Length: 67
Picture (cartoon, rainbow, N blue to C red):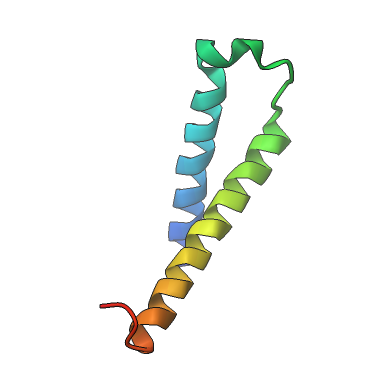
């Protein structure tokens, strides 16, 4: 499990990546605005998905299903 500091660092990295993706010129014609709060929610959701995947992998290792 990630420490609070590592979670915060990961969230900042995810936010930066999401912001960069939506600044890309190829996405200019998307027809909607992605605001700061939306990016925060997207980063938090992404982090939660990654943490859940890690939890499942740990469970599978404990159960002997994953090496």
